[in-house]
Length: 103
Image 1 (tube, helix red, strand yellow):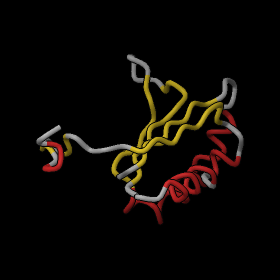
Image 2 (cartoon, one colour; image 1 turned 90 degrees about the horizontal axis):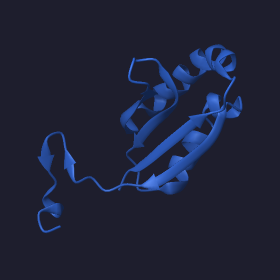
Image 3 (cartoon, rainbow, N blue to C red; image 1 turned 30 degrees about the vertical axis):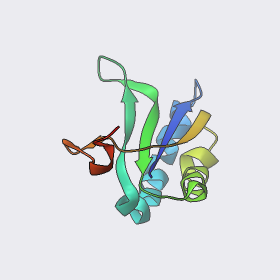
């Protein structure tokens, strides 16, 4: 089952975020095949809300933790909190998962 990684940024780290963004994007490249979803959390007006959500396709919690712990944004110290939670697909790509029909 995949893992959800949710991060919340510390206040006042926007400059560090901007300076680290290229390294973060480069770090993503070899992991893209494992990403089901990833993106920034937004305010209603579309501005950044200071966090992100990632769903990584791995059965291994350690792999999910290693991924986020070695992200350049994490190493730059911008995150206030990081949570890693196992996740079960219920509806995916507009379809109910077969194992969930008896849920």
